[in-house]
Image (cartoon, rainbow, N blue to C red; front, side, top):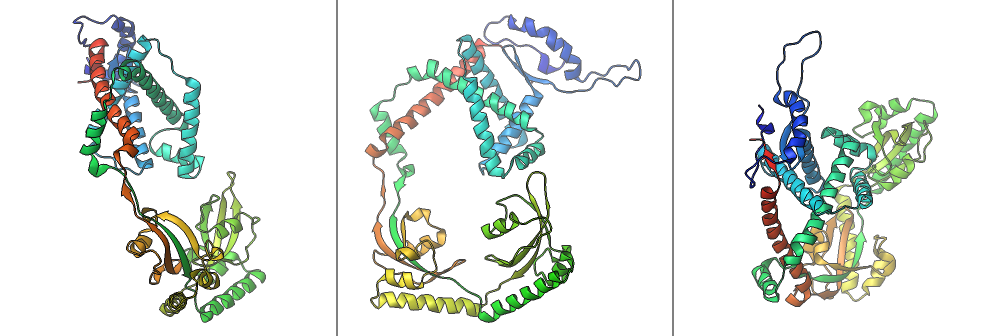
Length: 455
């Protein structure tokens, strides 16, 4: 007989009464679970394994399919949060099986205490979680495709998530009734925790109020003139009735030129530049856009088709606008000239209003706002980490162009005191105690309820 179907009773020393009710079910499943080979009596296909029991908790079986779904869900949620999956396949399997068994034990204890979960709240949480995943993947279709790659349908995933949230509610109920009332956190324990974890305590980072001048790097007049002339030749070719694909193959300088400009099907928001997105979703089928200027160059878009889900199938003719080292150097000189005006005594706000091409700050005299140093980009952090209040930095080259910053105000950070963190620290100590007490409680449930695992 398959070991998954053997019974073992811990604690009581006798065969549990609950097993009597599931024995007929197990006997019916046994030929499938055991993978028994029968001599065929006709053209019928022989028995095949469709699922098997990997554990039994009280009267509840845990199937291999339950375990497989738990593992896939674990991997998917790790991927969603950007974490790496650690451990071998067997270690993950054992951990997920242990988790399923502990969940079943907690549910058995909750039901024995006549606890009830809020199914309406669970359904709302499932809907919210699905919405978060849709936002993460970009569309419902992409979420479904991702689930299919993990061997699940959307309904499978909802059912699994609903089960997981129900388990969590039962856990909170059990902790609230049997664990938390016995937990006491003393003041000295909280202080000891603070001292022991001093190196891990959060700090309030340095914050700076900064103003900026941005001088963007522009291609030379000659480069812009050549691109403009080429755009005019492309528009003339299209106006003469030539096929878009042949014009794209002749003129486009993008990677799609050899495909007649075809760039595929996109949903709203998937193009890298809002101007391109707006142009693509305002065209009629067969229509070619006016030239659209992006940070990469000039695009002429053609709408090839509108898909049933609203996505657009597009082709494009692309002309890059390339900047030279001379263009970069010319922008640097303009930025240095603006900085010199400030150092010579002109008000930073007036120079920024006159020179800066940063639309977010130029109208406010260059004032950007107040930021924690750690919230700025790595490049900005390097430029500002040692800058004193009132200092005007050297020009800094970024993809947007050359920046000069002025530190208007600087406030040093500090480590949070015990008093500032006391409430959070108390919760951390309480959580540790609850986790330890819960582990002991679950260990006791193994003796209280019937558990049988595959050996």
